[in-house]
Image 1: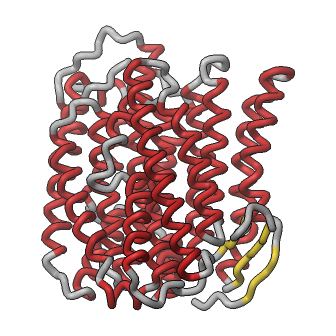
Image 2 (image 1 turned 135 degrees about the vertical axis):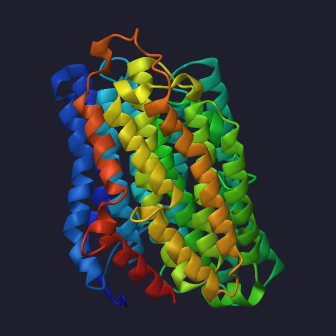
Length: 491
């Protein structure tokens, strides 16, 4: 698919601003009209999804929607909606709505969750801005806004563990921001441009550009929780409220992967990386992440920490497909971004439902819980089966394309790594579901009314569980077609 026609539109700017307007509206509602609070929050994330759906047909037809705002030199704020942007925008705006609805059910006490929604909406605006950025400078600004707004979310429970995790995340964010800043400065000074959509700005290998490349790996590797830059994530996910952990897993981690996609294909370019072999740095780190994350997950009794280390392994798949530099592998990466969001998002929401209803966070305490929470644990099991990569679930599709990409790259041995990682996934996920449904029933003394289904918590869980396989059963796999269209732009 070629994208040569450019249409100027204010819609990308509105999409980014609407959640920020929602922050102001929610503050006013909290002060003057508390009853309007839910409506304000939901509308502020529903409208970006609606606008994304409205502009999608134009993008699919080959049009690039563009808007330039001459602020903050030297590059200015540039918004660009191409086929990759619309894919990420649809994903982020959909999950923003899901997370907000779930959060309203999670924080049924308005005062307890009042400030949470302010920072949540700012983080969502940052994610949308990252997806719609037209140059690396704009990407940098929204990436930093998103990252800094997650710090209070990670520490929102105001526990010692929460403060510790929040500070660790904050310091890692500072490192990420400094690395990205210098990468942007070096790129601009050596190429004279930061724009996306050029097929690569770099034409000549220089030592200073290798420094920029490593800085990009550090900046986006921290956000994507790539080994060895993952150290913030297990603590943050264990200490943060469930909606915050879900936001990070389903959306914020993907901004790191998106940043690396832009770096590989829009900043350095495919031919340049093939000549220099710099992509092999990421290839090695991706394989280590896949195996190390799964091995560490075995040792975790806290459910959120196990999900966090599993996330390290899953991000390894996305980085692997990018590092292989083949079309099929990139399709696998882009599809896995969506597949992982549904799978891991569902798991985190299930963990939140379990915690709210029972107060349990340890896997060893959850034996028999499936008999009292069958819907929740069935959804968790569906997500677990998807994580392993069993057909017809989403992650099977992404792993299939990663395998094809490895063959295209002349590295068929990577298929063995993919199979080993799937076995490890099954080994630490399936026992949770087996014990939940077949383990001893240890929860008899829990009050029945606490285990009733709460719609604003359960509807998002059910939707994400269905999303783990619904695309592969449909006559037309729409996300896969979008992933292939993105890959065709670069190859």
